[in-house]
Amino acid sequence: MKKLFALVTVFALVVSCFSLSASAALVDPSIPSTTVDVHYTLHGQYSISIPSSVTITNGDRLEIRADYLHLIEGEKVVISIPRSSFDEETYDFPLYSSDGDSYITCSLLVGDLGASTADMFSINWDTCLDTPVHTYTPDNAYDIVEVALIPHIEPHSVAGEYTGTLQFDIALSTDSNS
Image (tube, rainbow, N blue to C red; front, side, top):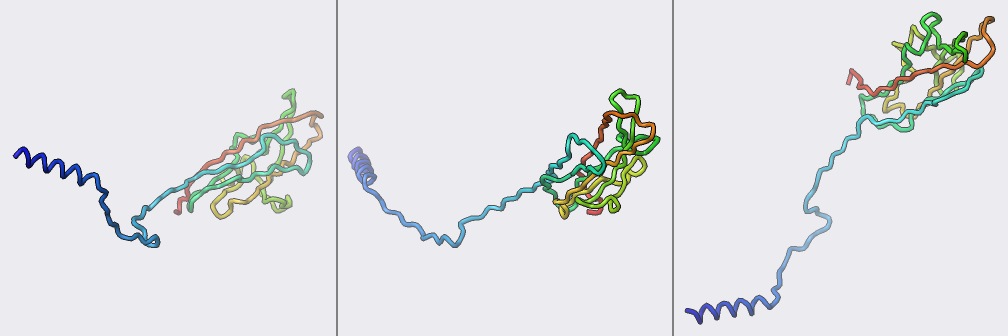
């Protein structure tokens, strides 16, 4: 029995030293072996450019544009000006003198790039809640909007530099009809 076991072990060692051939089926590269479904959703990414500072003279405008918009159908980016940017008495945007004793107001007109002021719409304290500056959707991602700042110089206005802070609110929202 010991001799038989030794003989089987020697035979197994000898056989394992020889290479054995194996066969595989030919692979046709036009027929996939397997597939993988890959899904990725890019939601609500955007970059809106609004200048941080502007010096106005009559006729100057500031431009608002989307650097990029990645929106799906039903998403929108709404740009608005809150009531806190306006004077409650005059309904316009106020600019204050450096000493704070005097102020002037500006009308804000909004329109497409290059639009005449006659074709622009007004935004003030009374209309700002219902009228956004612009609403970007997937269909108008390349729109450029202008805001014209028209100062109202009164006879009692004091000469000097006037400044003010115009706030813009930018919000990603979903269309309620989608």
